[in-house]
Image 1 (cartoon, rainbow, N blue to C red):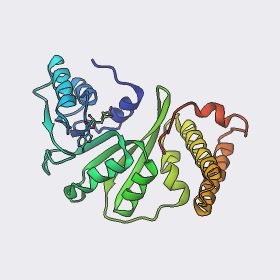
Image 2: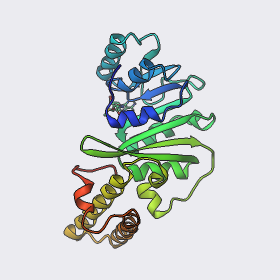
Image 3: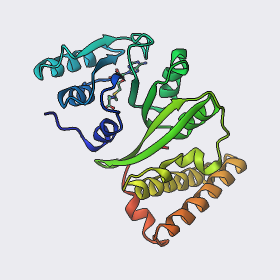
Length: 248
Ligand SMILES: C[S@@+](CC[C@H](N)C(=O)[O-])C[C@H]1O[C@@H](n2cnc3c(N)ncnc32)[C@H](O)[C@@H]1O
């Protein structure tokens, strides 16, 4: 059976057994090949905007004899998936802003109890803001360290209730409520990203006092959480690990 990296494995673990799944932006198709190969899902769709990545998925699924179980669809976002075809939609490995646009362009996600598993590479704060304001309930977030980076995977269902996002929620969402052992690394990564943003504002003298204050407040809150979790001031930077942008 195909071996997934920790990021994709975390997503796979959050797929309910027996679901029909659409993987939007499937690229290599590994997630669907794994899910279908181990019999966890009833079937599904590997979707991508671009032909080249979709051909990779086609080849992989054919190599594992899974092309009868997972259909490959070339489409923008969810345009190739009709309401009623799936129970779970995965959008992984894209920016938080593009992920929000893809969700927003498929209003049927709001009419049915479709579970969304979202794993943004960047701009998680933007994605949270979109979801909270637009009646999507983020039921769970799980942090996951994979290679050099730490990510978060959202499990989301629409319930129509718009929510206000608290300051700490905007930056770490429900990661603290998740059961992931990688939570601490996520908090450290967000803290160091925000420290970099503050340093950037100071260097450019761009006069963004409100933003700077917001970042400083969140840094303080994150440090409190880290202290509660047994860390002291000196080990945060080292443990947060490398990475250009991290998941903010
Ligand atoms: C970085 S890959 C992520 C692959 C995989 N989902 C993962 O997490 O490892 C992003 C993929 O999304 C596809 N993509 C980008 N925009 C898209 C859109 N609007 N609709 C569908 N696929 C899209 C790209 O062609 C690319 O194959």
